[in-house]
Length: 423
Image (cartoon, rainbow, N blue to C red):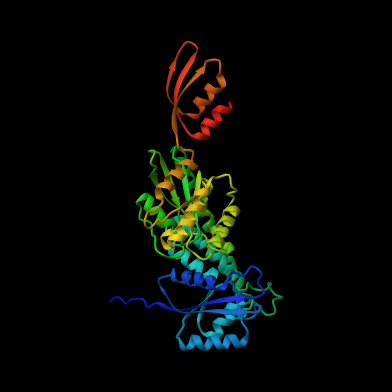
């Protein structure tokens, strides 16, 4: 007999800390926190609150009056889990759990839960485990004295025993070393795969963007693949690759990556470098933006900042894909198309309706220098430099040798034409 698992009753709190200079606007921040919690199917969101805080209290984050007031709400609503959208110290977490009699997750803990729920590849799973262990290690608090097992009276004879915390720490460190070894093997295998892929003469186009911007929907639309594309934060955690044929008959490889998010905890930036490493080897980046979102500019800034920390420094060509125009009014769409028309690296589209995808595919071909044209050139034998360059570029379709030189037919991009003229 199977019992359906009853969803855990959750309340989401966003502490609006007045003294925090980098404060996110609390309305959108609370919405994002609720979307985060909704990304775990086992949670049932009962309520949500923005809690104004002059400054965080070291012991419980909130003042005692607020702790009592919230505790009564949670009791009356049978809340089992409180998600606090922000960092909590281990001491604050333990005190609040004791006061409220509920389980508490901070932002990092929740994101880790989502990541472990979503990771599909061997590497993704290992990365999540490592991030979770690093996070747990910081949660081993000195105050757990009742867990300490001391050997020998005053510790003068035979030295003091190892405390439980030290034993736990060591166990975690040993586990981390084991995982790092396994990961090194997996990464090595992937490096081999990537080297094999580098031999395929297909350019790689990486989709990046804030979580929920519509990357997976666009990926599915372009490739016919069925990557999980739900209206959920972090729906994709592992790089998925498929080939797409552009209208000029050229094949490119499209790579879908994990969604970015503001205030991504440091343990996780490291853990997800792996899923973002594909971006480093990309020939072109498509930065997908949910242009209908109130905070689209802030989200865009977050994405560019993370790309920067990853080491994508602007050498890789980037196209901004303004997605979800189907959610805008006709006037807004007209204004958007106007702006996009003035910038060659912006395309406005709807991944859902397919509007604007033809322009996007042409822009990809252009961005990769794949908008090739065919020309006939005569190069004298004496011009060794030009001849060597043509052979080196691999763009010659036919060659006919004459008395004074060779007639070549070539297929080349505007960029290559310009380079040839400079020789």
